[in-house]
Length: 75
Image 1 (cartoon, helix red, strand yellow):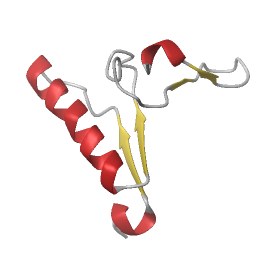
Image 2 (spheres, rainbow, N blue to C red):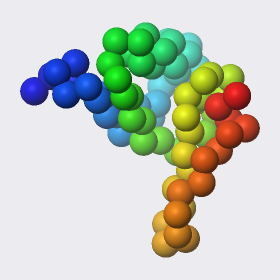
Image 3 (cartoon, rainbow, N blue to C red):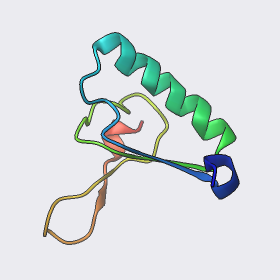
Image 4 (tube, one colour):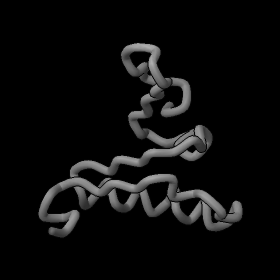
């Protein structure tokens, strides 16, 4: 099933082994995807990936309870 049909696009660690130029291109791609697909879910350790965007960023920590919304990254 396609991402457009399901309304969600999921990426797991998409910035691994990318140089800064391609990380930037990927960040712009996320913005484009978010305009055509209802939800884009990115699982990453790269906390800087969404700095300066309007993305909703949540931080999960292993075995420490509920996730926290990291507002300062997504403003």
